[in-house]
Image: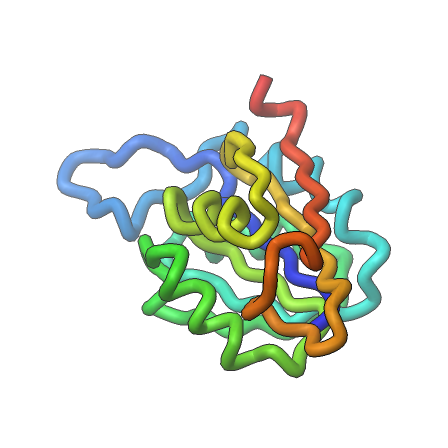
Amino acid sequence: MKTLILVRHAESSVAIGNQSDFDRTLSAKGKLQAKEMQQHLQRFSSILVLCSDSQRTRQTADHLLQNISHSIQYLPELYNASALTIQQIIEKHADSSPLMVIAHNPGISQLYHDLTQQWVSFEPCSIGIITLSNEENTLSTTPASLLGNFVSPLQNE
């Protein structure tokens, strides 16, 4: 893996009635965020996507990847996963590049921080693109060999 793309799902709607957190959908603003962020992924010809199976992460993937060649795996274990769990899942797919993970906070932002030593506000639909510059192309390395590039949608302002 040379490139890892970490994505927090776009803004979700509020729960309606007895709707579970898992079943919350994207808000209108969230759909706009995902469409806006497509431009930051255009340089990738094909992406393997590991996505939480919650409704809002699925919808984020649908809107974000509309015009990008990708294959996607929905993983229940990514729902509200910790940074450590996300990293363990990524390591199982280390031979894929670029690799994208669409998940939830605080796990996704903590992992970005752990890998890059950059603390950023991972607002909805923010994207952290990490380039591995070490020989092994693994996450089990020092942060100095991981270069992070962070972008957040204007729709958050």
